[in-house]
Image (cartoon, rainbow, N blue to C red; front, side, top):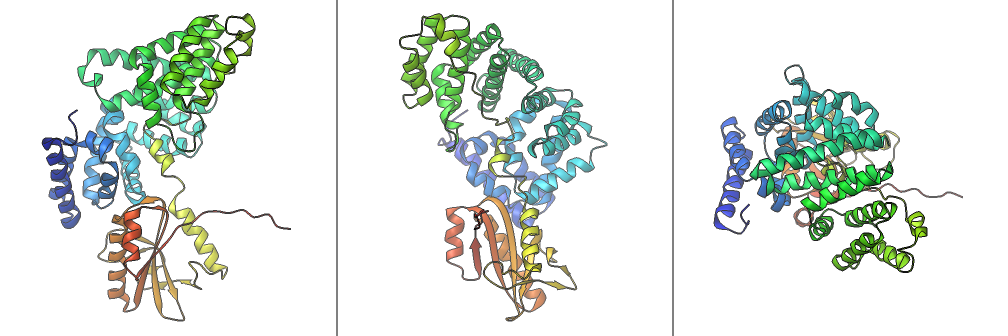
Length: 455
């Protein structure tokens, strides 16, 4: 892959953004097709290097653009599931709630003609809602690498490590073999992340099941694919701020556990010393070295080594859903606000009521002539003032500001009333904050849940 700063890549990216802007403005199938084709040319760059801007632009595109995405998604899930991992998983995770809902609905309504895609989206919903037992029947029916991966992840979450090991390790080795046969996969960044993710689960399942010989073999396969230096670097990129132990420390701990149980003490010590050189801040590895200084070659240490440490559950291709709290859906927040209003509790600092007119009730309110639904339309009855409220349980940029301006302007034309906008977003981006500060017709709120002890 060429560098983003070279002329060709930069020009190709700007070409896509130009066509995407045109598609967002004119909202025709022809414009969407041109933007979609341009996106395919630079998709890896968009996801890997221009993610924030790409996410904002995706939010503005019309359904005709996502119809093309759904068609490709169905084709790849049904006929070449491996390319779902490479091409589409990261885009699915970037979609705004309304576009994700549209894509999901399209996949579900096409279930008769595209059973694998239908089963995948149903299984994924259950999986991300923390119900792997309900997801299992759907993933079982998908006869491909995609089904094997998520089936293995379901077993992993259910702590059925025997089945998880069988599926995930077999898939890991199959993909390693495939990589050797196809040069494209040898340098493909996304394919590498898939192998990286799979390798952690395969190693730890063997350690948990006390199959230390197989754990050692798996670790050696991993180190044939990734050097210790590469594992340390990947871990830094793949670890969130709230994680106390990195993926790299997990790998080193579990490999060391296998070596010690096999009484390969010198190999274990060499692994720990090299690992701490690569990652001096790794407190877990530091403790392993300190504890082993005087005991490493004693039989006692084989029994004293700590138990395996589990890889953080970040199923490949759906990590972005967790990060964005995709299934902490806006409708739950909407329902909570509606209940407060019905109970006479002020919301957003005002005594408001849910608005209703000939166009509809003020929940999921459709404004004629504007794409999308307003989560809530509220009225301050004392001032004859309306509020268009948009709720987003994730991070948002300036695209949502443009959307709410369309809502408020059209609602004013429709009702003849003064309309202000309220954005309620868990993690507003800096660009959005700046926009709202300069506009006294739009208010921006964030939210959190709080529990207080009484008495």
